[in-house]
Length: 361
Image (cartoon, rainbow, N blue to C red; front, side, top):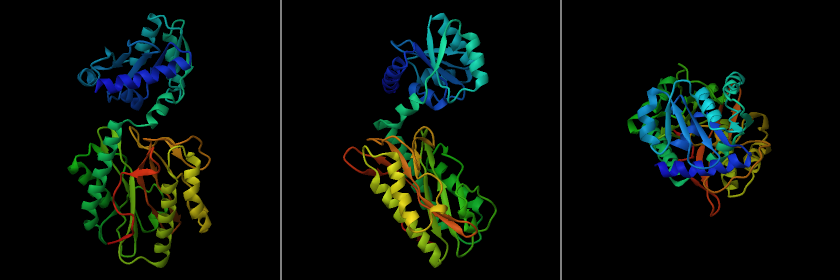
């Protein structure tokens, strides 16, 4: 779909001109893919402020992929891409080059400068990441498929969860079924946290054996055509104790408050506050210390971030997660997470469809 990427590059060129730069050197992998269509571990794009003389550089391992995915771009096949593009910037007589300072190390920038004869550099900031927050129709369709694959995998795994199964085994089952259903791979390292491990938000699955009376939190997602899903469900093995039901209902209420706060034009911090206030009012402020959610797309965690003190407004076609949790050290925890897309018509559309009621297995 070269026309989609060409349209994105034109929007990026407006940002380059706003920086009073002659061109931008795009080196962050997701940003290169967003602007060109090429997924590569070694690629960069020299994007001029005007015209269509963009130059995509990658090494010989990706020549075929670049010719297939970015046929409308001039291609440079070179192992040391950044230095070569810097030399090309000098050859073209550029005066000022914007670069992705948030991604580039001091060492790499120093090497870049040595190749820029008479060319000044200026940080580009998170300009391309900002463009990526609002998804086009094709991007939203890919995220929706990723979410559907995640839901379907969980539906297959839930009947297999039982006492005696290890956390690692549940994680492998989720990963396996996502792959069988057509996912490229897991969107991130799958989290399965049972019993007291549920009090650790990003617990890595272990050999702990699931037992009757456990809450089990599963945080996972599928990757589809480069786009990520991210969902969390907490289930009970056997009838839940009173405290387990209480914190589950609390987290569910907090998530619902966050979901209801989502709308076109809302402040990111206000969405976090809507959910956080529910948990704080119940006396569990210290047991919910991470942000409420984040954007998803070509990266699993990308702008916008929904957290305490976060600024910026959400708008139509921005997908975000809403994932409050309550974590009781030594006891366990609950997190419920869904992916939603803010809509211009008001509210948000949910992309993950598994029930948010407490499932008792």
